[in-house]
Amino acid sequence: MGGSPQSSSTPARDFEQDWNAFRSALDEGDAAMFDEIVDKMQAQPHAMAMQDPDEDDDFTAMLLSVLIEQQREIAELRMEVTGGRR
Image (cartoon, rainbow, N blue to C red; front, side, top):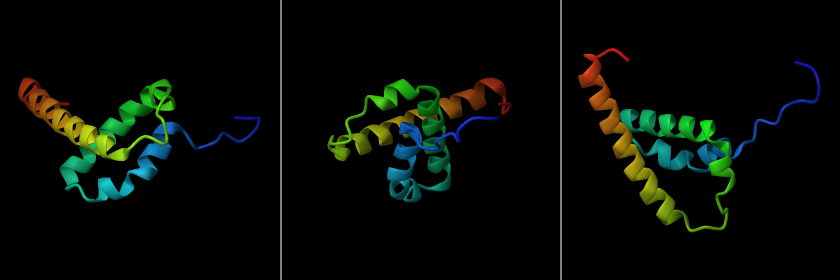
């Protein structure tokens, strides 16, 4: 595509980079769940743009942990319902 080069920095990508150490501490399955959550954030960039960069990250870490658990449960239920098909 022509025109000026597109910036690769988005709120979701910045979030992913900022939380890379958190992701690295997760086991492989949970890291995949984290990646799914980041993918969902990228689908909703306006929500991530509203994040206050000065906000305390302890709450964010807790929230991410809950989201990962929920995402795991969704994935397990999806596997049960579809018989292993995605």
